[in-house]
Length: 394
Image (cartoon, rainbow, N blue to C red):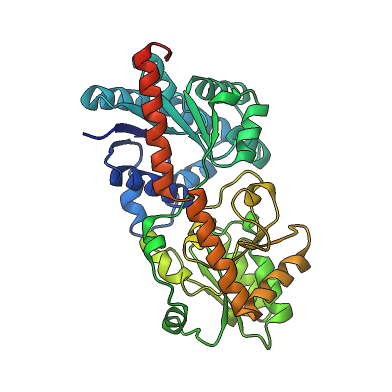
């Protein structure tokens, strides 16, 4: 029997967070692990392409302090569910996706001594403070410190994030950078760009593509502006695969600039069908990025051999090499973005070279969910050996 993993999360939205959970869980199961899920049932819903966010709505309706109290209170039933799952299945490892006000996994580890890996995707206390503040600041800070200090290993999605956690007091020897990955279907997919473009009715266009849940910080309006300035005789078309809070503003900007016909937004698409759209991209773009993120779309673009344009930031440079596996632009200079995109739209051979190099780099560096699952399994075995030798402490 393979490793038995208790996977705990609090994700109730069907966006990139759910994609991340699906990618890792499916890879762990493919590697022979038994994964017991404790948390909202996002994986089934993700396959339907649904895009609503019930938690986000609740957060917008309630006073901040009350919402945070509910978050904190939710840790109690979460702990009881975890404890019951532990009694029923006796797992070898607890794998928790970090969330603020959520010490349930740490409580389980303290109670039964199970080895614990903590996945951290963002510095939530800092992030939520910047977005409007945290009402229960002391409780939030305590929960973050407590959970990170309790975990045996903390898996940050970028080295930039790992450095931030270390600056906030996390032990360096417990930190490990593990970026997001691409699923097997992307690696297996053949590249048939002309056929996919024809199926979309865009065979005569240079398609600039983006996958994700559009939000303000993605800065997708930059591509609309680019097309308005340069697209009249180049047949540029912006294909956005996904749905999100930034879509309405994107349509509004395109219509105001007279290029509404050059924008297609698919709406929510089941994740296993997204690959078909990416194969139609001439240029895959990431116009904006948070400083610590590991964008899910980057390894997906790499796996499919797309020519990528992305910001020249430290977290992006962890995955891509400028002029070798992508063209990186100055995030503060719109002309730098324009130049990179237009250069690739006009140079098919450069697109082929960069796309091929990106795919090879992904495989060499292990930016896949399969490789991430192997890392988790290796860490679990190491923790088990340490526990058996008496050097592991709960």
